[in-house]
Image 1 (cartoon, rainbow, N blue to C red):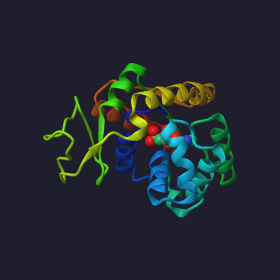
Image 2: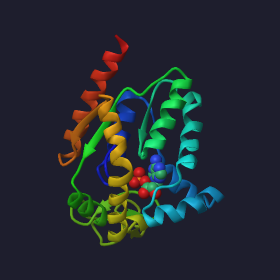
Image 3: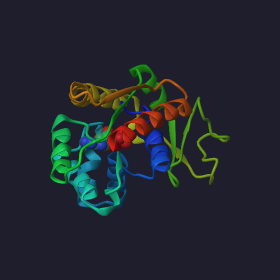
Length: 216
Ligand code: AMP
């Protein structure tokens, strides 16, 4: 869990390698559908561009398909799901049907003004998807990717008014999911203002401990 720009994707990617887990990022899956121009992608694009959530049943079905395949049998990371209480309930049901449950819920906390700074400064390569930041990780040549020279663009949903809307959606729809896991005693909070390496060390240690406790 964590607001947009908290670094969920970065951390999930590292954990995927640390623990050899499958990594399912709903935002990335949806952007892929949009790129492919599928019917589903066309529907999702409107929501993504506006900074709104895609309907619960569509996203849940996407996750259900992944969680019922062998690739998730040895464990998985969810990045960007569940984002509503309806999705959290659906996830419980999917896993309960398989006799499984979530091990840990990690919340990467970042204040709104830092989210705005991070997202509005982000520039993404049109070809590789690699991202830069105008202040924190500037490309050598303005608006050109260091890796392949392709054009760098601002993601449609990283525009200031869309970021504000995504934050509002996060507060209204996703904050209750955090409370939901907190009430169940499953939530572990991490300070997302720290360097990515520090956040990573913290999250990795948390998960290692919880997996150990789960196994004994
Ligand atoms: P992200 O890359 O996780 O910030 O997600 C980008 C966008 O994809 C979000 O702003 C939503 O429009 C959509 N999205 C991603 N995950 C979900 C989800 N679990 N439920 C609904 N919409 C989602």
